Image 1 (spheres, protein in one colour):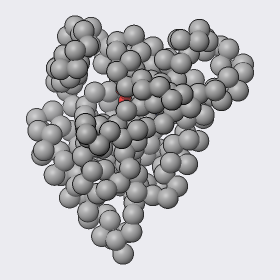
Image 2 (cartoon, rainbow, N blue to C red):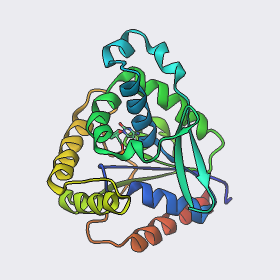
Image 3 (cartoon, rainbow, N blue to C red):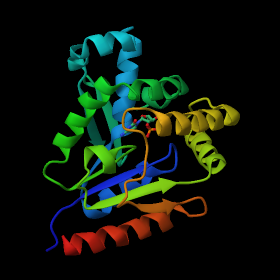
Image 4 (spheres, protein in one colour):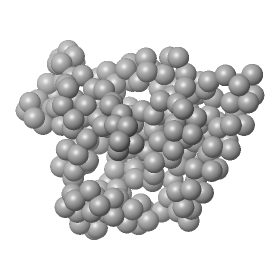
Length: 228
Ligand code: DC
């Protein structure tokens, strides 16, 4: 009774999965893992090293030089994504990476490489991971699965404000189109498309504040933990 569980949070782009996952992890003293950041870091690595996707498919060992980790900054209360020892958190959130990441994440060899690492991170339980295939592929046995969605324009507006706050140049229509394109690519790709796990609970947060979502999800999590 009351053992640790894994929590899988999947859903569409920019609907606040990361924020909800971070809030849950903090309240439960669990580890938060942003699996999308891992796909973004791989995208950055491939661009920088001018490696194209066909080369990766032919020689997946090229990926073995990529080391991704997360560092928690106590002062900022924030997780930084590290790529081969470098903090790439700001770089991976820019539009260049956002535009390329869907095609990178559609490659089977890249998914296998990252899924292996994600499964290792969750083997002792106590993990909140957000992404697209966490409840279906990475942790099919997660004790709590949440599938998040929200209206695309509301998501674009939130992402626009977030980028502005971080000082990253942004254009609303560009962001909206990127979100719609990614919804389509993520849901129609051949390898691990974004689908709702049959045992996931849907959270549509179009009209919810962050606090409301956090409260609801925490109630669900505590209920599951008590019976775990
Ligand atoms: O969550 P995000 O927007 O940072 O994710 C970036 C991209 O990575 C997104 O277009 C889909 C992909 N992704 C994925 O295919 N599987 C995951 N588990 C997480 C992200």
